Amino acid sequence: MPSVPSVKLNNGKEMPLVGFGLWKVDNATCADTVYNAIKVGYRLFDGACDYGNEKESGEGVARAIKDGLVKREELFIVSKLWNSFHDKERVGPICKKQLEDWGVDYFDLYYIHFPIALKYVDPSVKYPPSWTDENDELKPSKASYQDTYTAMEELYDQGLIKAIGISNVQGSLLLDIERYAKHMPQVLQIEHHPYLTQEPLVGLCKDRKIAITAYSSFGPQSFVELDMTSAKDTELLFDNKTVKSIADKHSKLPAQVLLRWATQRDIAVIPKSNNKDRLAANLDVCSFDLKEDEIKSISELDRGLRFNNPVNYGLPLPIFA
Picture 1 (cartoon, one colour):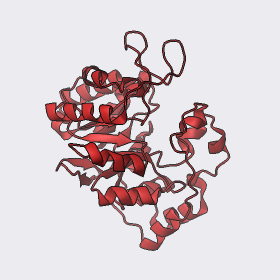
Picture 2 (picture 1 turned 90 degrees about the vertical axis):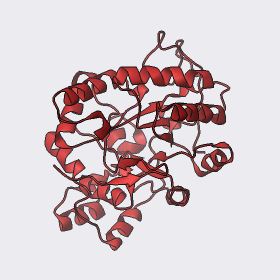
Picture 3 (picture 1 turned 120 degrees about the horizontal axis):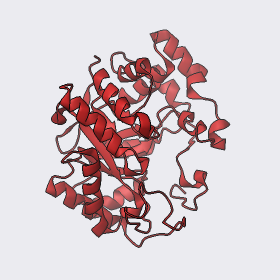
């Protein structure tokens, strides 16, 4: 079983550098997938209520604990607050529902998923939530980010979440949070891959001692599956000659090189796979080191190319404008 190092958060809590992402994990196989990932050695699981598979993820965790594979305190369970629960009075109740779905007493890390506040829709009416309300309309809420963040701090003070996360935000909002936060965020989760390195934002977080988790580490790969035009028109990173050449030199897979490019710079990653061999390979990305010039050559692939942008889904929410 590969040894996975951790990164120390600004509140002293340790977070594994490699975890398992639960986005697009099918409900029918999710419990088994989580169970098998724990068996392989994964300890961090990155979920969200809009993924629609939190109950099944919790079933996999419960089975692994019951079978003696792991203890709850050895796991690092992550979830996210969806956009339609930003009103401050909605934050606590939905977090408690998500905890119940997972079958756990606390989240190790809980993110504000997007800096977008949408109209509240009761879970009894529509759940898992989506971008639109019960009438399939996109409607905003008047909740400010400060109101939502303050409600997150209350969850933190109550011990329901052990770390506060923010996601899909830019430097301007992070600097604004500094003005009112009682507890600075422990982690920022962003789209981060060689086509979108976001180096100024990464530098700001390092300066503020905020850890970074990268999602979509393989660039266009996940978005080709969603039939996104910009992803289909972009060369897959697995096929990129720079990445392939470095992978050959180290006798590693291109996926392992892409993940190591991040973890070697203390950026956490959350890849997923249903294939047992790839599960193990994706976890084993801290046992070799890239040379500085190799890291540099991969970083030079940057195009500022963002895939997970609401406007790419046809939504009039240009949050990265």
